[in-house]
Image (tube, rainbow over all chains, first blue to last red; front, side, top):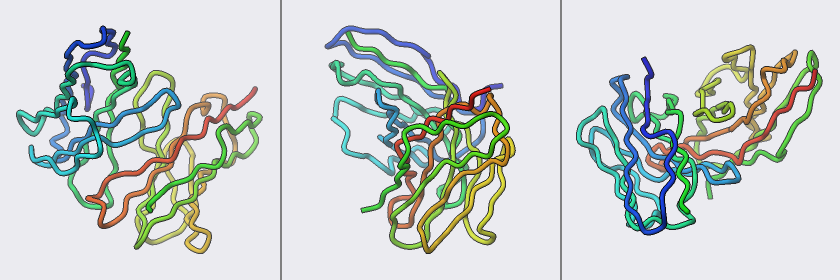
Length: 114
Length: 114
């Protein structure tokens, strides 16, 4: 069983479209994240949810909207896609919000906007 | 500002030789330090972490890292490199006051040659 699974793995879409990426975890973790990895492999946090509550919302365009229907899911919806949104998006989870627990990552969703 | 630096874009080492991947950090308060590895087209995998206690921490796949408070460093090491260790390595830090978010370094590509 994959602990943190993302769908789809690859997504190619045209500029202006709206798309969603889904994340599901079966670890029972309280905290979930979305990270963006750009073409230079730099990783930056976008959002963090703890028990379905938004905790971190970095400087991300409001075209990006996370949604957590329950503790096991954190989806990322992107409106009006732009070329610069092309990246790999990673979902991650952590057991609790404390300082000393490590994060578990999904395999990533490679988004290509054409 | 809180930050993590990985000064080398790439590290090349011959199989069987020891390897070091460097990481320095700048945070206020006590740092919580992590190393992750990313294989091609995969998500990040946790290797090891320093929370408190012994400065030398051991992790997965024979890796270890040494926390040096005076030099604000957390270098990743392995006594004998394998070709299969070739991957992208990320150092990350968590600090109090930052909603426990994980800040990543830019990554270092490790290439182990037969």
